[in-house]
Length: 201
Image (cartoon, rainbow, N blue to C red; front, side):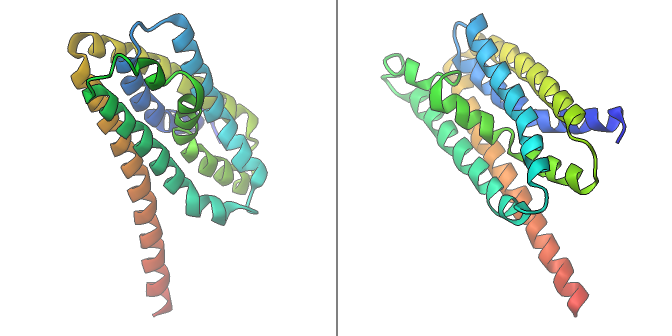
C-alpha cells in the first residue's frame, strides 16, 4: 500500500477525532498547553494503537469486533455528549466545571476509545491484505494528533465567542457522531445480509 493511500485512510479516521476536539475545545477555557497535550497525545496514541491491535488480532476476533465496536462507540459518545449538554444548561455549570473536563480521567479515555474504534477495522483489513502495520499506524497516529490540535484551537475560538451555545452544540455533535457510527455499521450489516439472501435465492 502506497503512502498516499495510507495518508487518505489516516485523514478519514481523524475526522471523528477532529469533530470531538472541536466540541472539547469549546468547553476547555482556558485552553492550556497541558490540556492540549493530553488530548492530542491520547487521541493520537489510541488512533495508532487500534490498528495495531486489529492487525495483531487478525481474523480470530473479527466477528466479535464487527458486532460490538459500533455499539461501544455509540454508547460512549452518547453518554459524554448528553453530559456536556446537561452541564451546559445546568445552573450549576460552574460548580461542576471540573467534572466536565474532557482532557482528564475516564472522560478522556472514553473519548479516545470512541474516536479510534474505526481504526480497529482498518487494522483487521490490513492484516487480511498482508500489509505491515507499523508505518500506517504511525501515520494514522500523527495525522489524528494534528487534526485534534487543529480542532481544539478552532473549538476554543468558537467557544470564546459563543460560550454556552457552542457547548450544547458540541454535546449534540458527539451524539450525532455516535449515531453516524452506529447507523453506518447497521446499514452495512443490512446490505451484507440482503446481498447474501439475494445470492441464495
